[in-house]
Image (cartoon, rainbow, N blue to C red; front, side):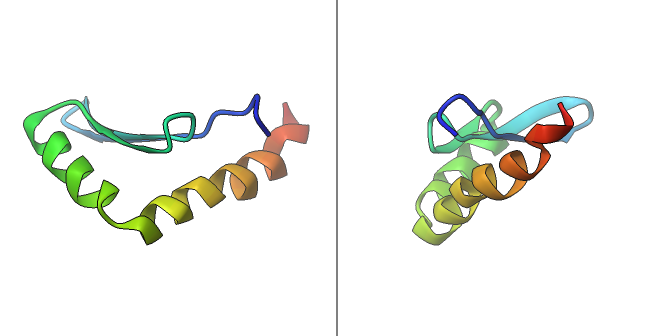
Length: 66
């Protein structure tokens, strides 16, 4: 599980504005809107723990496919 990276990106008008990176364990904003949303989402510990759990739930389930 340490070699697996889960990334969830959000786009608007073909521009990535926020991303959750499991290696960092937090959201990262790339635009003004993304930075504000990343600060809001990172301040919620339950949201961060849900996204960290997605690494095991989503990635481990699909690793056999690749």
